[in-house]
Amino acid sequence: MKSEIRNQRSEIRSQGSGVRVRTSEIRGQSFGLRPLFSSLGLTSVLCLLTSGLFGCASTKTAAPITPAADSPMTAPELKIWNDPAFKKQFAQSYIAETEIEPRVTSVERDQMQKVLDLIGEDKMDEAARLLEKQRGEASSAVFDFTLANIYFQQEKLTEAAAAYETAVKKYPKFRRAWRNLGLIDVRRGEFDKAVPALTRVIELGGGDSLTYGLLGFAYSSEGNDLSAESAYRQAVLLDPSVMDWKMGLARSLFKQQRFPEAAALCGSLIEVEPDRGDLWLLQANAYIGLNQPLKAAENYEMVDTLGESTVDSLNMLGDIYVNEGLYEMGVNSYIRAMEKNPDRNAERAIRAAKVLVTRGALEETKTLIQRIEEMHGAQLGQVDRKDLLKLRARIAVAEGQGDEEVRVLKEIVELDPLDGEALILLGQHAFRANDPERAAFYYERAESLEKYEADARVRHAQLLVSQGKYAEALPMLRRAQELKPREEIQKYLEQVERVSKSR
Image (cartoon, rainbow, N blue to C red):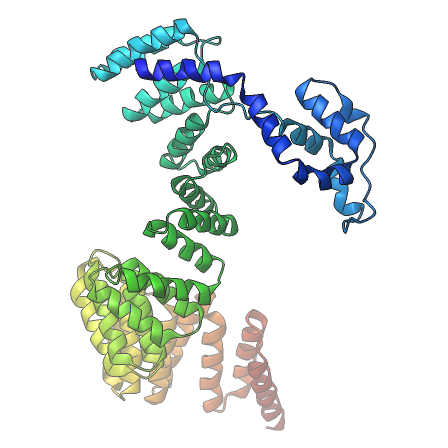
């Protein structure tokens, strides 16, 4: 601590030479100012110098800058040079940069030494209490910063953030305080606060890899993927060895739907770390975006081999196989997904079974249904049970097993007497079995259900037409059209009307 105090004193003694050093640098680089002098005009430059060094308000009276005769810039392009804020900032550039650490008085230095002694003895609570007594509106921001550090170390993030905020209010160029405040904001997930804090660190010259990387993470979390990409690129540039920044860059490219770049970057990263499942997974998703499903499938299989597959990745793999007509492999993937998390509901697997049965993959559908019932039988809700029974009924119809179809449909109706779809299917089966009375019975039950009334009336009308009862069928069809207008039903209605009139 004593050596630090001596260093601070030497810095104070050398501070007065700062302007002289900068002035000598300006003299040494005078050739670099000549284009500026010709562009701004000598009077404007002198006014800028005097306003920055001696406080005169010459920028208010300086003549507007106009393009020099040999300048390639037009008047609109020189607009920024006429901006008062720019003139003020430019004038300040002739002054030595203000330090990014707040000063402390000799009294405060002695007080801080006591605090540091307590910290050295690991008496953090005592140090915090002493700092609380010493800090105030007139005290150095160093006291607030040190107290914040103690709170940060003790995981008291709310108290630490408040103390850091006080420190930067007292001393806006306190870079270390801004940096730690940004770290806390990221830890707490307050990314809208982390972005300005970390940006301020960079403005103050603290643009290291960690700061840029965390800024990229904050931007990404806020959905600002373009800014996240820029920050991650800077982080990678400053420290190419950190894989997290490269992974963040790949994710930001993916979120921008720049799939070729994302896939290529993931490929280069996989060569370095082939055992990282998240890299294979991200590249697989990029392949999906590029409409290269079989390449994605290879990646998903590799992720599973690495033991890092998820329920979602295995279901996606199953979808790819089914879309490619590889039904058995698709079912195997869906089953692996269920085994990955047996406690998850069976909704996703049932949806896959519905797709399989429409593709005519009956054996594969039966295999999947059987595994669903074995793994989720006791937890299946009424809706899921009905869906599985309907799938079994469709399979029975496709395989010509009429009796099995009826058995399943009746089981559905027993489970839910208001299932209009099952009632209509039972009616159709009775109609095919040449049992019109039973068919009409099921259709009438379905007609009493608002959701199924239109379809049930059409089926009932078809039954009546088959019996030559055209006049009775017409009101059924007209009512169905009122409820659910359809072009093909309208044509059928007109045909029945013509036949009815001709009789």
